[in-house]
Image (tube, rainbow over all chains, first blue to last red; front, side, top):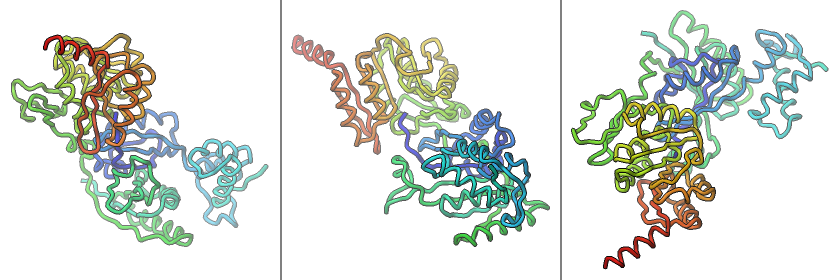
Length: 141
Length: 318
């Protein structure tokens, strides 16, 4: 199958909730792909990740065929779930809203490793710690 | 009719991700990020993606329903963008209103009936043959491409179809390696092949191809399997492989060349024809024709012993 890429679109939506409504409809329909089929596939593949934002990167080829890959939830959402909080702090330096452990940081870093711009796990953990601080979430041993 | 306010903003990839996360709670459904490749002067996006270039910028799009929540959502988004601007300069977003439409069916407008030759018409399954302008003696292929490759629109599919028209004879056994939507396997059967096997490593393609085979009434002669050519044992009069140059070269090294008499290879860029010709020659094949369309070529090869036999027979005849 000779494939030449026409466009690449990443969508960030909640697992299992793809529909042809916005943002999927207006952002993908102009590229000529079968949206109903994409939604069905996405929902089937993300069925066991309910509640998380699972990005999909869709590669559309010149004949309107397409493939897509799934990413991992945003770091901030994984931190929220780990800390058991609804959202981050509006004043992260003064008002702390939760705590996560180094073990949880490592777990998140391992999960996000392939999507992060980090050379090793230690670098990925530092990024996770940075995101936690910016949300007012403390990292404890 | 439901109306939406579309927010769009072009920025770099890293910032787009951060903004996407920041505005996510205030938009409906989620966020779309369209990647724009780095282009050299005069290049089109499709010229560059082949080589997976760096992403120059990202167009972020998000949608807000036009209802009582609109102003509050927009205010929160502007706040988030204001905070982002404190870190790095950011262009102003543009807003436009879009009206809900049947986005789910819009893709069908891109796939229209296509006449491949005087005799062959490829028709999407939602268009009637009458509407498509089919003649009584046409060979028609009715397709629903799904996600699978092979709608007949691509030059390589068309090149392979032309080659099949030239070479398939009644009674032949044909193998289609990387069958995609099944379009080539179905054409081979409709041209009279006695037995056609299609294989694809993509399970989605296998399902789509099987549906298309049934739709075209050739299930008795065409069988689709999941895997590479090794799942379809035996010897074939003609093997067609419309994949990619590197994959074809590998398949030849792995023994595909010994499995048939005549071969049609495509999915090959003009600049890659030499590589595939060399791989074919190395396993005892001889390239007898090269056809091109746009940047793409299809090669027709045959076993060198077959060429020698033909030349001896023609000398005998003369």
